Length: 88
Image (cartoon, rainbow, N blue to C red; front, top):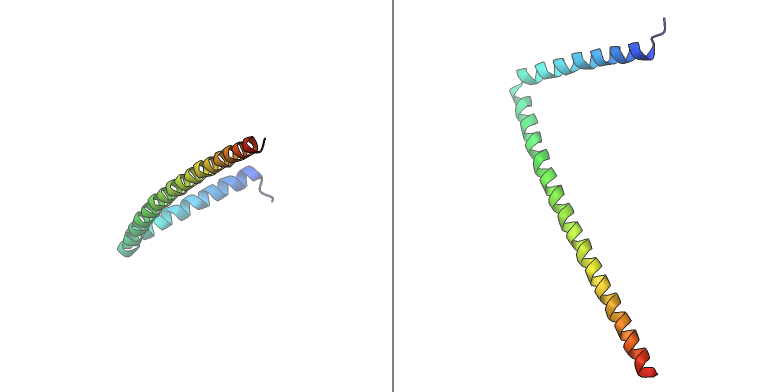
């Protein structure tokens, strides 16, 4: 008998729920596992903060580079304008 998509989804959800329950029970019975999970949570939080800080620094570098590029372009246009005015 073939299982329909809806029945398959229900079956998969039930199995995932049972697996999650078993993992939770294992973690509760294993203090070392709990400690490792807490450490990983702390490490992930620290890495997330580091990544956010790095993105802010990169954004600042891009803004600074854009301003410098605009200033150089403006200076070059002014120099060309002055040079052409001197030639005529």
